[in-house]
Image (cartoon, rainbow, N blue to C red):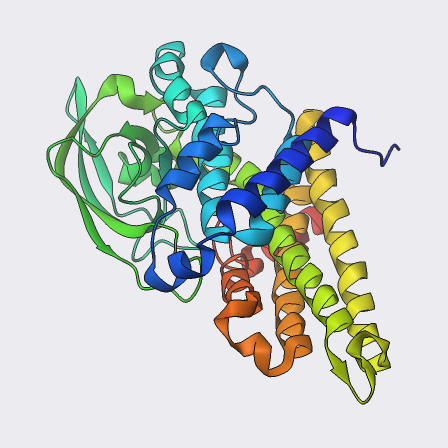
Length: 380
């Protein structure tokens, strides 16, 4: 085992860190408070290659490995999780799903724009009655011969109003249950496609989250991904990689909170000395450091599995389960170390605490990760 990052990995880490500090940090509190989508920052992220990191260069991507993606996601997420979730969805779900399972025509049509940041995508699985139980799709895609007629509602869609390409999971053959589900490429300009109001969220408030409604939307047959009935398998395979992205986001939130807490503890004095010299604070910092390092190794292991074409369903689930808990715990303790200052916006840690919670929920709740892991453990 070699735990050293390559020269290329270190360059990517530095580039992501510089971008986060120079482009994302200014204005991040205002964007959070006013729920402003980071339009210009996302555009620059695309120009730097962060939106198509694992996309083949022949489709305009960076052609990098999953470890590079984890490294960049951590650095971006230290500062702005609202920006990093756009990066995660575009890379892990939309670009990867299209590149892995799309036709050559679909790849040529959509990947260059997605990888460059000219456009970005959305992944549409969750519904009012289909969250953790993704098999219960009520959105229908009726086979009309040369096209599908799509009706239904999707909930909590990241990039819901700002995306240009939507990967929509819908039921075509209800009698076949999950084997009758399809994945369709849709665009917002299709008649009958409408976007609901922006969600008022606790965290990642700069992220663009909406419900989507479909009323007799005609989707050409050539927009189906894979064979008829492949949609559920497509969603599960894609989400397995998406969990590496969200685990990395959680890792970044934890790292960002820890770095702020460590810095503050060396500046703030109480009882005649810097508070980092008090054992109560020092032990909190030690616990943070250990848990973050463990989370980082789990994220890297999952990425390594993906890069080496091994099954990463379990390693990705482990990374997401653990890193999201570390993000929550670390952010809460960072607020505690800051005391009263931790409760106000200008010190950033209260925002990181609010942002951390969603990592335990989206792209598979912590409970779903435990189901994935326990099944694998029991099966041996």
